[in-house]
Length: 253
Image 1 (cartoon, rainbow, N blue to C red):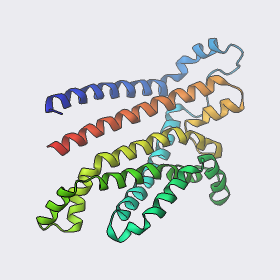
Image 2: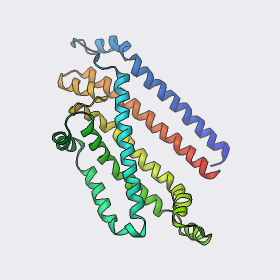
Image 3: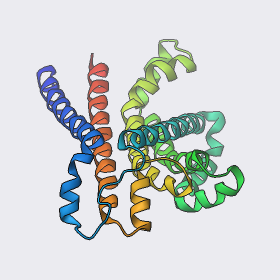
Image 4: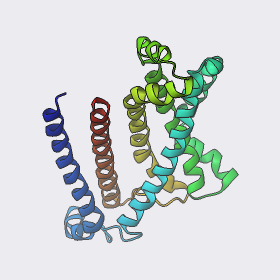
């Protein structure tokens, strides 16, 4: 991609990201203005607008949960991927991949049910469930990215007298970074949507109006919560698009 073409695409993504952020902010702070709309849409409801915790506060708690679990999953996934692609850790590759796959095989609801008796209600069981659920794509992409580094590049680095640690930090990780970032993007996207169910165990997330709406047969609450979760997911996805373009530009510089 030429420099001019890059900045054209970057500018388009930036505009889309700005519009998405603006839409999210309007939903977070302007949702009460839609009360007449939901009242007309569901005239039989006594309370057509969710009036519990503010959507902005719920979004902050939601993203804190997503951020912490994604960081924990990224640390565990990247370190595990690094370990099994080294000669001394290759024998554990099958075990690591099996454990990561098992973490995503169990539904988050099942993990929550098991974690609650051990750590209680609140954010703790949600962090455990989301972290386990997000590890697999990061492990897989870390392994794929590191194994995708061309052998001639590694041979050239060794021929220059670079030590294994220097090769990893200055050659392998920079070249594997786009693939690893794609895995992190998938993990965060999963967590943004999955974090909504954490409200079933007492964690404050954007899933709260959805859960309350489902329990109280109030579809307006469900729609309101779903709209904000969807807008947040779009913002996060466009943010990763922009980050990927910046990384691509940095690698070509």
